[in-house]
Image (cartoon, rainbow over all chains, first blue to last red; front, side, top):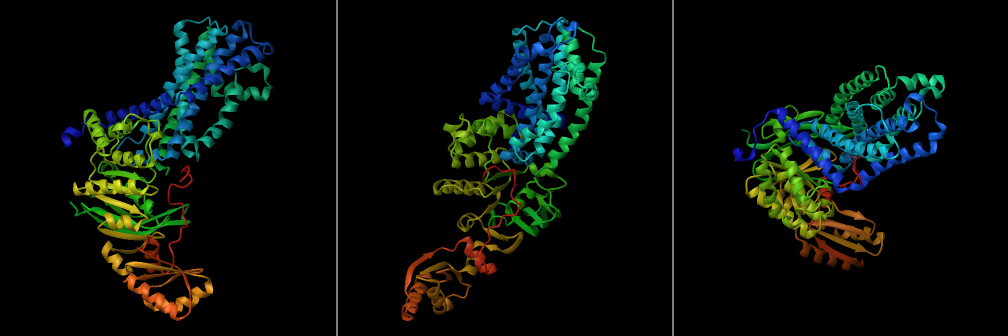
Amino acid sequence: MTDIMHDDRSAFAWAMSDVLTIARRNILALVRIPSSLVFAILQPIMFVLLFRYVFAGAIPVGANFGSYVNYLIPGILVQTTIFGAVGTAIGLAEDLQRGLIERFRALPMARMAVLAGRTVSDLARNILILLVITGIGFLVGFSPGGSFVAYLQASLLMLSFAYCLSWGFAYIGLAAPNSETAQAMTFPLIFPLTFASSIFVPLQSMPSWLQVFARNQPVSQTAEAVRGLMLGVPHGNATYISLAWALGALCLLGPLSTRVYKKVA
Amino acid sequence: MSTFAVEAHDIVRSFKDGEVQALKGVSLMVPRGEVFGLLGPNGSGKTTMVRILSTILAPNGGYATVDGFDVVKQPDAVRRRIGLAGQYATVDENLTGFENLRMIGSLNHLKKSYVISRANELLAQFGLSDAANRTTKGYSGGMRRRLDLAAALVAHPPILFLDEPTTGLDPQSRQDLWGIIENLVEGGTTVLLTTQYLEEADRLAKQLVVLNKGSIIAQGTSAELKAQLGTTVLALTFASTDDAARGLELVRELSDKPANVEGSLIELTLDNGPRAAADALRRLDGGGITVTGLNLREPSLDDVFLNLTGHKAEDEVPADVRPSRKAGK
């Protein structure tokens, strides 16, 4: 019986297979309940419209950006991918709540696959949202001056950054008692990171004490890099700093979340 | 190879930094190829025991083996030999019945082609073929339980843990599930079953352990436990608590087990129900006490507890069952 039942693969190959199985399951859920995806897309659209048409006139930006819409869209894209990463916290908390994780823990699957599968499916979701918001950006007048390759690099950079953050949100999802609380718990974290940043407004407009935080925090660095690449304007070492933050977060938060997953009851 | 499918020695587990003692040194020896019943009220530690044996939770003390493998040191070997299904019927609501089984099959590292045929086979066996391609959100409680059990069986585990598999099910679904479990055992599977229902344990389990507040208070075959218990419970209702108290004096000696008194209700455990009932009525009538209600029934788990501990099974629930995480029941 063993012969027809079991497949002989290495532990690593099976771990990858487990990650894909979990990711596929999450993506199926996304397809089956499209409303969650619709709202995940609607929210950044609202932000685009709000800043593009309501606040734009009140926010002066440097001449090298051309217009505020060029300044804004790369920022909104970064914000959108970060908000997308919050889905990891919500999804994991939901699985815990429903007792599904309990079943997974009694299976001979790779321990990290539940977390990795979730971050992978959230990445896929983020790519889709990013494409839609990019389209919306062009519709409202975004005209980047950088090369196409630089544009792709910028997209890759923010997706990687958001992916690494996902592992941190996984930790929150595992620690929260339910999905509503998980979502609320991410708020005090992403609110200052996305708003006290160069996503919407130039740093020079902020009080000097806030500038110190805003200039050096990872989201601003990512926004600077993405904007610089897309528009073809100088952005110093922002790309490398952003990548360093992302890798650092992954190396620290990945093992941390996996450890919590093994323990959480 | 051990003659026992599951062995547990002095398992201790507490929650909330030792505040709640869920298991206080529980030992079990589950023979192969039969149903072993773990009986107890809510909060007695049944679920905690199952979670420890299925490697979900580590014990604070003691050790356990499943199919000869240590649950703490060799969890993956244990996981390859067990199936787990329970009262929470943890199926994925957003997947169809078939997709649920396929997912569990691939996470069990089975061949793709095998998983597909096995999933279809199980769906047919459990009467779910028609619902195979519907998401389980629309399944009834009984259908979910059957799918949950099917998921536990995808990889043909020799040992099955069933945590209150029929709690909350209607009588027909319960009968169906019992039939399925009996078939599995005929096919050689070992089943560790937890239940609150004496009837269920009686029907399925050869051997029983009764848990109360994290300790074993009785064990043996179901016949042995029943013999200890008597066969019938006589419930008498009176017009007032005064009448009940005076009535108790008259009928107490009909049973050698402690009587249960609640307000104007008296319950006696008897070996020969009908004759003892007639006897009780004669005595009460002779004493001039009116009986307003009379009922003869099979002993319940409560009666077992009353008999074993002298008090009713308390329904206090320590943080034993996946506490704050569960939405609803």
